[in-house]
Image (tube, rainbow, N blue to C red; front, side):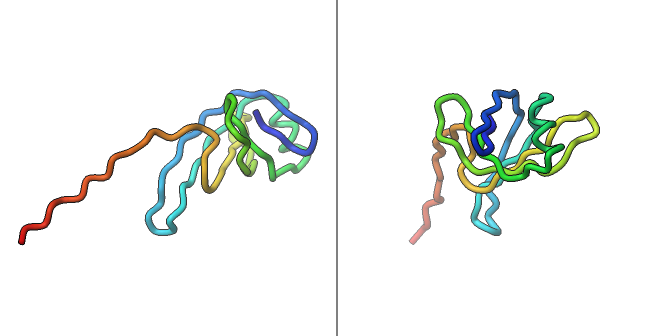
Length: 95
């Protein structure tokens, strides 16, 4: 779901993200489908909130319209989708 002011749009999105070790932030981006999202972008809306399922909304930006008439969406920090837990392996040091 994409929210702006009091407007909530249920839409299909395809997003993915990565942790950038240089700036220490998680970056995520993707595309949002549908005429309602395109209408937001046509109205020059950039700042939105995105939620997936029952998750809490996170800040995002509508950045541009793609050649396929979808809208590019980006975010910084916690993504709108759950992340899997990870294990970090630290090599043992020899004495």
